[in-house]
Image 1: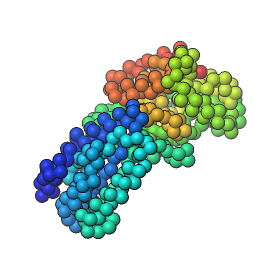
Image 2: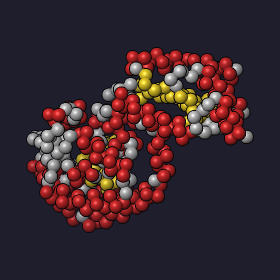
Image 3: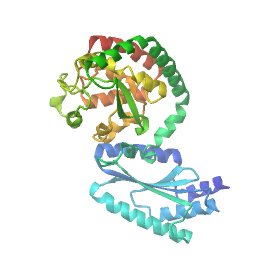
Image 4: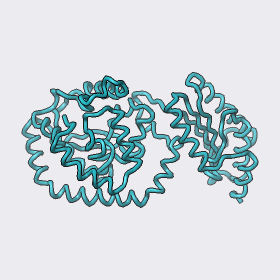
Length: 370
């Protein structure tokens, strides 16, 4: 019955089908990244478990939303038979707030009029703007709005088999490496402990897959209680300066060099990437993969341009990756992101194997390391 009603609504109100509507959201989001203009998305859902007559509720909602459809808006199914979406692209930043206020007010009024009740409990209304802006004191997880990235849920379903194989390879290889390298772990732990007072391991919150934070482990390479503001400032400058031609030379590095916070043994660990070995535990836990984009810092993600964020949305972070074996630290930030996106959109088990095989040579030659 509900399928028939949904089909009737599609014809009566010229609703765009779910697949096409979601593709439109993705396309307009990327256009917004290029143009700098704002995309507004309103999604209204009927909670079938609360609504006594979900069919009637769906009809009332569709009628209400279609009555306030803006001239430049696209009306379609966000989730067939459950959620209606109204997409308004190419809004100027100056007008975005007023349009959102008007849209919310008119939609609430139209729904109340059609449903004969104010703020129905069986109705869910979500208003989204893109690009998303967050304040410094807000979490980077606020940047991950599933309504704005509908293609991610589609890709996840299509890649279930591949992801299972990739996860299996991560578990087997990380277990083997942790066992085989355990003597080296003991030696490095002793050297770190002797180099300066403090813990052997350094724990740091990083941004993982789909903006999920996790604690990453490394061998400590700095003195305890070192000030991190210098690194924060450098990363902010480097990301902001990435598109300037004068910073595109091979001498530009993504790491802060000549850092007096690093211990004597820390310089060796960083140059050989041995400080990264404890991340095998993160791989075993599932926070990371053996191959993937470099795990980002929260304050780094806050500096990202909208298109940069896709590097932490499309693939799980890895110990090594395409960027590490191609350029390591000696590349611009934009180039690093493009390499990460290239990997995420073409990844396969064979690609992972090739990157893993190329990693020892990159580490031994020290190409791009600092």
